[in-house]
Image 1 (cartoon, rainbow, N blue to C red):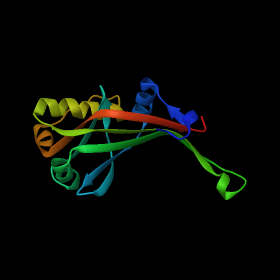
Image 2: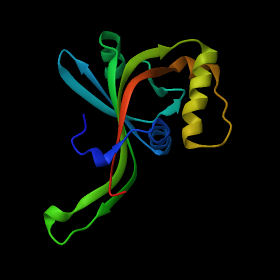
Image 3: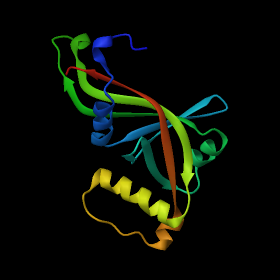
Image 4: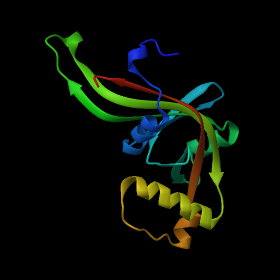
Length: 153
């Protein structure tokens, strides 16, 4: 429950708009009660985040043991100066959510996920060689819940 209700964003369309404008997504994982967070490039479609990564590494290992994730994104960031140090601040819109991660399998499904990721950053069309598709892992995060917050808007 958000402490400052006037900052809460409850409209799902507005939260999706923030996700679509964000440049970086941070995903947080937990391994034996040890937190791990990493910034990633991503795409969003139909209530799911798509993240490309290497087929090996800490993210992959942790998700195989515990596929529950938290994520966070921000948009419309602007530093605001104040007369004193404690009056400085940040204008922002953000979304934090929780979901279940899984791995996208199959060449065609991976290509579709790569298209979703690339559309987040570019309107160009892209081709993916079979070698690249086999080399990359795609994480799909099905979002269970999310909450939005804004300050200065």
